[in-house]
Length: 340
Ligand code: PMV
Image (cartoon, rainbow, N blue to C red; front, side):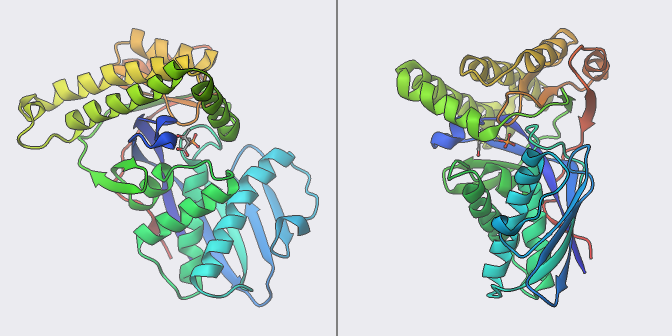
């Protein structure tokens, strides 16, 4: 059996705009999906997932979506999770040139599904890494990232950036602009997450932004402005030694990153991807004295990320109506981890 884990992520800046070629900066957090894979003698795939949501499920099928039996859990949950696992299996079979390989797969995840913390990317990355190793074909993290991107793009009908999968595979803070993906040196950001217990539909939200962008040139300008925020923000996170930002003490740079996160959230809100509960958590964090706060990921529901080195935001979020869970996110420089 082989076991791999991969981290979730928060977007410091740039979701949605990254779909149109603007840069984005996600950062890996120490909440992981763990995938165990054991090769089978036949070409079947059996998947058990206990923690992907409140309900667990086990499904055995012969390798394609159409062959799946009915299972007694919400169809949307099975479809969401199984789609990524299917696509990861196909990538592993392709990488190892073993089109008929069968697997027993167990998925455990500490990352809420569809909540903006990169659960699908983490499952896909860990799944490809474990399955390729199980077939004796280990891949470097950059290739795992590339294959995980292709898997996600397939499941999301081509609407995916490389941001989530690259960040999950290599860890740390990364900058993604189109196909150009690289690690950056970010300071240790004091990130607090608020989770409203819900989820957004990434495909629908991306389609909604696309419709606005096509209807209004100012929506297009809004996406370009998000790109400007990311370019300004990256000089605060990882200044070149010659940049004037390099002279600014790190605490002050982090405070300014918070201010830019507020700006980024406002623009995401204007593009229609926030929600009442996300906005309440953002405001609770700001009122508690956070440097800044914004939704993370596709939006519609799910998580916000706030920057606050003090305990105030965490406490305030725990008392905020609509916030189901709040926790401090430890950043991790570890991407995919090989456990067994
Ligand atoms: O909510 P998530 O973690 O699936 O992030 C989606 C981020 C988008 O920019 C909206 C889409 C993408 O693929 O980059």
